[in-house]
Image (cartoon, rainbow, N blue to C red):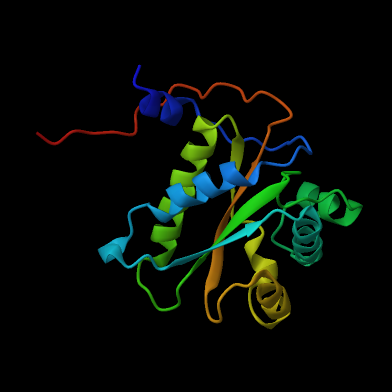
Amino acid sequence: MNPVIETILTRRAVRKYEKQPVPRELLEQIVDCGRYAPSAMGLQTWHFTVVTDRKVLDRISEANAKLVASDPNVPATLKEEAASGRFDSFRGAPCAVLMSGEPGRKFADVDCANAVENMALAAESLGLNTCYIASFVPCLLGEQGAQLRRELGIPEGYTPNLALAIGYGADAPTPAPRREGCVNWVE
């Protein structure tokens, strides 16, 4: 099978990681693949924030846990996890790439998603595991998140919208179930 197609068909989200750091040269390759993702009108309305300091990811997770614990719309099991101190937005990954979109750009969120997917596939091809994450976003929005956004170097006005947790999976992911039924052909 073509190796690109094989990577696409076998890549799975991993939600538990080893503490082993990811070498910077691999992260640079992964981020480069994100930068080469397609973007609407070629505008590249994104900003990449690569976080390799686990303490920073923990601070984001702690801020997010406070919001989750107080949100009446969150399932009880997630609220309990947030209150327990075990809550981790990044699932224990040693690093993550946070994607932020340029304000006022119509397709910035789609452009960011394209970049994250490119990075997820690149990471998989390099023997790493990933997890697409959006649940960290609330703690970075509004005035309550302004200080964290500044510390992360997210440009003024850019909106964080996705992240990719990256690392070496602690468990082997289960194979993807066969995908059927959601396609029709108009010929």
